[in-house]
Image (cartoon, rainbow, N blue to C red; front, side, top):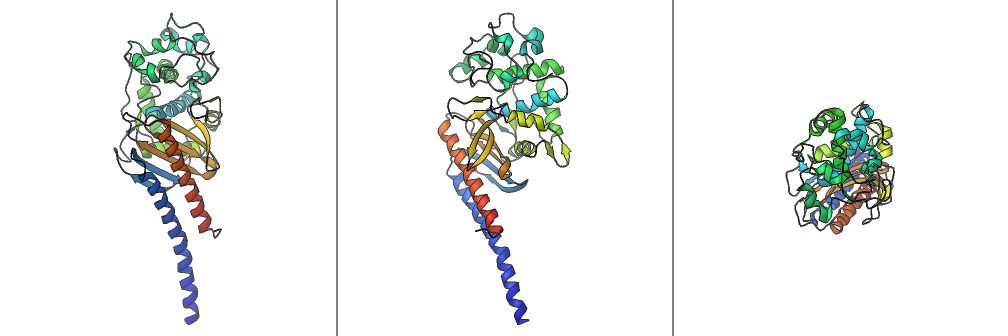
Length: 338
């Protein structure tokens, strides 16, 4: 019995070390999160397992939060599902063809050449409706017509011009090709993925606000991230097309502010030595997917102005890096590598 007691104690210590390392790594992530006054909620998953759910403000984890421009990432998902269902032929189809009579006769010359690809990648060429132009756009009587009569700042398919206008055009396209409101369509299709859509405002014509103000809970947003991380298959069933995910993550333009690449509703960058795909929204809303690290990270923050903008989002990126590095360290310790 004396000889058996020592091995039992050693085994207990071996179990305790990984657990202590995991707790310490989570504590480091929480400490970093608590330094961000605007942060509302943080979810970190690795290999599909919840590592951390942290709340320090806002509506919590299960109630819908305003995603702001992370809505563009969700819109990309809806467009991909529409293509898979045959409602849209493909990304090379023109918006003029898809919108039909909704395409204004007074559209800016060249706008007829804008395709689904151009709108998804924010390379429509039209002057932005965001920033200082945002107020005039959302106060207009017809948001679709307003977007398509903006002057051309570049050719369709040229440089990335950050604007919510092109993604709102895609919402109009979905309503036109489906014969349903985009909101009803989104509730149906996202619901099939286990994602509940909350409040989503519409323009004066009843078109859901494509690319902004979509409300989804942090936990449901994390579920969307997991669908993407796992190549479109979750819980033993396929809900997204893997080819669409690959296409969405293919860089097609570059942000003039952050320098990060942009695909179809997703930015592409490198964090802690890992390729990271992310959607971001005003005030600090974010969905990060890091496939090689097997991680999905959701962050919600105060969506109200004033927002510290790029500086704050840079801090959110550093928070994700803390999560990646501490989880990698915890995993290596549990394997006896440290």
